[in-house]
Length: 341
Image (tube, rainbow, N blue to C red; front, side, top):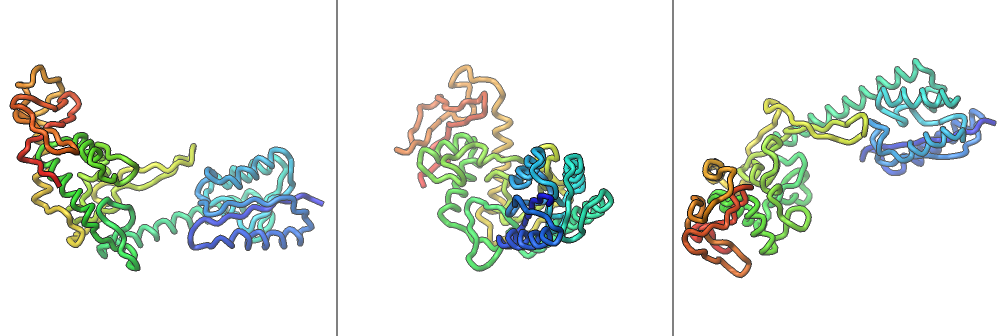
């Protein structure tokens, strides 16, 4: 009697956890009809069929195939094994080399022609499903709702999918960050101030300059996120999988593909304030050369400087400077631009 193993997989929330058990039950009945002796069961729960990577059940199955542990692989359908043309063909080719038959409840014993046919159909269905999801997301954005991602200062509205509301305590922090930046303070100095005061960071334990700066092309980072000015922009990036590693990599989309919608109910800062922030950024770039300061008197950023500490505002003597111009870390701020919150 030939030895058989069963492989089952489900990939999305559209299938429940019992899907694996249902597939195994169907495959066992199919193996019994074929007179096979089931010697093992392998499965992956909530794993995409778009790649062989990140699927421990499939990896263990292929390792067993290398040890001549079974003669037949039984699955409900070829798309349970893979929804990628190349991956399905590779698995079939490897099993054939090991003299292992691939037999599916829907389709029977798989030959090269069937593998090619099912591989094309499976990948087309997967890609079409992704297109439908994207169309649905566009509809969400155009209705003024959030299509995903969490921004500091907002939380989901309970019972109203995709809708956000402002968290006023965090919104005050956002306004303060923009105020500091508009006055000419560098993100690194702002982050240090927030950390010293114990203000909870959006992610992790500490604020960093990158939390505020982000990436201009990707539109992330607190200072660059248009949601604070009452605009939702979606589809700035898309994800692709590296076929050699299975890792998801984000790539920037052309601006013409962006979906932008006004969301005034989410505005924390106004357009004029954002413009002031942009002018401040340009002013800092103009004033700060990539050279070190030879003497305190040569610093044009803070002729009268002050440094914010948890204990209060400490005014520095005129002509002193706490700015590190070489790496654009500006810790010098004037008493007129900062008030304790």
